[in-house]
Length: 325
Image 1 (spheres, rainbow, N blue to C red):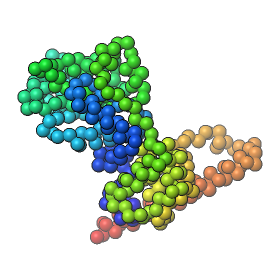
Image 2 (image 1 turned 90 degrees about the vertical axis):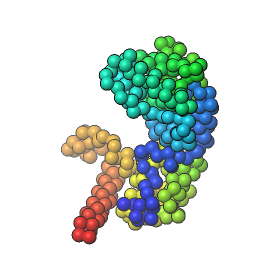
Image 3 (image 1 turned 180 degrees about the vertical axis):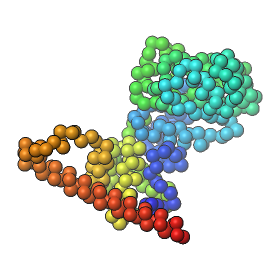
Image 4 (image 1 turned 45 degrees about the vertical axis):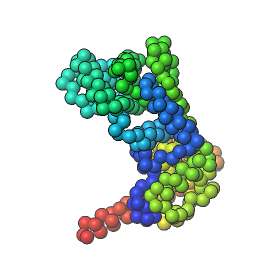
């Protein structure tokens, strides 16, 4: 909806990772350097950790988009409490291998043939394991065993382990000493600074044809940073809602006050209201300041309902117009 209103070619703040929107902040740029160093070594494990929404997957997809497919063949698996037996099958399937059964010997044989075939074509195999913090120690050990493959004295495989901060605790397990010895590069992806947050917002807008409408004022950018702490996915979520608000209220410039209001609205939608707040006579027991606070929340709620009603009516009008077009 807001793409048409503001003249964008696409949505600038989608939550789905898209390497075309990659922004090289200081932390992301340093992470790229670590990844390139790891690739230059041609073996072992590269570990990237970061909070939820820090941009880990986008970073890896950006790196892969820069690699020559004639030299690398990559596969990605997203783990969800996979067992040690299942992880090998998932690896094989991610590379498009035909695996008739879950028999470990059969799966390993198929993977080894794949390694040898690509080695003959001078291509290195890359394995990306996302959400690695979900893997049990036994599954991580299976991945380590894959790194034991050698062809003509060279390793045909290099693995990237991407996970949330708790993955570092998993790696510290005594049972993973051999895997830790094969980690050749490791980096923790932190949040962006206030200045980089503003640059990030403008960067994504520019990728879809933004020409200054709507205007994200300096105070607006500072408010966005205050509410998101410089975490990319939080920025995307808040900025997307700002643009939706702009369409509903026909706004062509955002202030800090608007950002605060939209952020509060988003918090309200996810918080749980205690049942005690609905008890009859609760207001009588509350102090004057509490009553005023409730009134403010009620007014904010009414404003939200009004905006959502506008959105519903606009969507209905567009649907009717298209159905009769």
